[in-house]
Image 1 (spheres, one colour):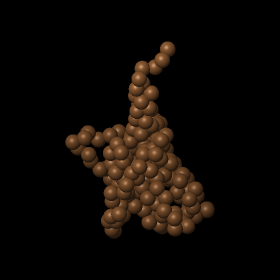
Image 2 (spheres, rainbow, N blue to C red):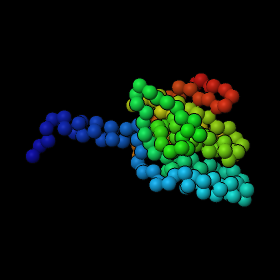
Image 3 (tube, helix red, strand yellow):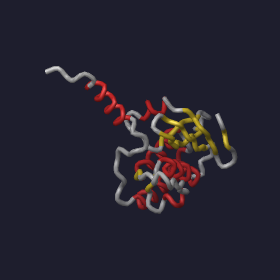
Image 4 (cartoon, rainbow, N blue to C red):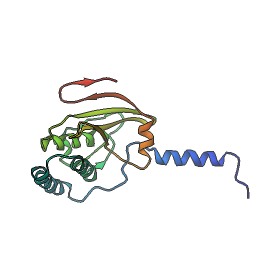
Length: 171
């Protein structure tokens, strides 16, 4: 049996859309994220005292923040950016809320280097990520909603704006 003409194109488009769906989680939120978060904060504080800040610790903090979070998009006509305090009530929000949570957690742990929000214009819409200046002065991007294939979407993106608690940076 010969496939219909154009069937491969439809399959390719469907596969591409599945890979590049934008902000949508590939995991489930823990049952008690608040309790888990308090335990993690204490654990990270002990690690900071013992070993100081390093890339592995920053990776652990951001990865754990993402795992505690549940992605829930805001209605299109009411995109509310939650603060760190608002987010920690239920640990639910969209990409900029999760980015704010990662930012706030690193600030709470007195991370000594620079942190920035970055807004990316991606093929399927705008997206928020966290930029962290690592202890060796390199900058690293942390995707607030990592998905398989997200690196392709980010590679096709462009920075719209970045900011921290003092300045706004335009590309």
